Image (cartoon, rainbow over all chains, first blue to last red; front, side, top):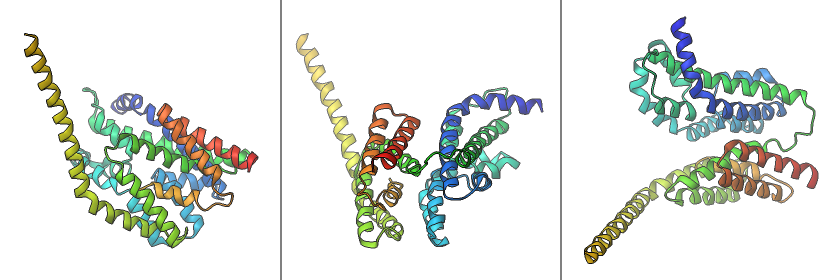
Length: 256
Length: 57
């Protein structure tokens, strides 16, 4: 018991930034879900069992839009495909975790993953318990957030028309973040262009699947080009640095 | 990058010519570039959108 409390106390401070984010986005999800006619039990159940962040937002629209289960599965797979890589890089860590292993695999999110990667476990703390508490604390924030949101959504009777935009805003934020940090903007631009094109061709109810397939194809084809481009950019930067060095050396030489 | 076409699904199934969506998306992007804070961007953008759609359009 003591050991558990100690691990919990050690893990909690690391999760505070995640708490702020998850509570807020969870609340927004709860309000949205409530507005579509699902009560708070559904929100809590979904946040407990599905626990998929942005995909939960998308899923709300998929439920109400009456899209086939196969499409839902495919879209979910595409949106969350990055988890394959998260999982792979965590294999060694999770292997030793015994009974916690399955929960850890289930509860791996972007934020939990970065916490697990970045934080060093304090020396006198049980390693497995520490990681487990990080994961479960993060999920509890998400569940509490969606509970608060859906209860608030049913109690407050203000005109909440337009609250759906929280989802769009979330995606715009992710997009801007990608744009600012990515080296090449070709994938981002092609993503927008292809999906717009498919929207015009296939119509709003069925454009998701074709555009995903085309985006994947285009990006795979472009991959070699992108790699080359990034390499040449790096080369150019190196050349520039070398040039500067040479210049400096020459100047120093001349000064002597 | 794969996620943005979900945005298109929402923002283009519209009636009032998508003007509130465009304004709000620009607001979100601007707030995010300026502050780099997820909460401010999402809150600000959603508030902008709700005000626009309820009072202006």
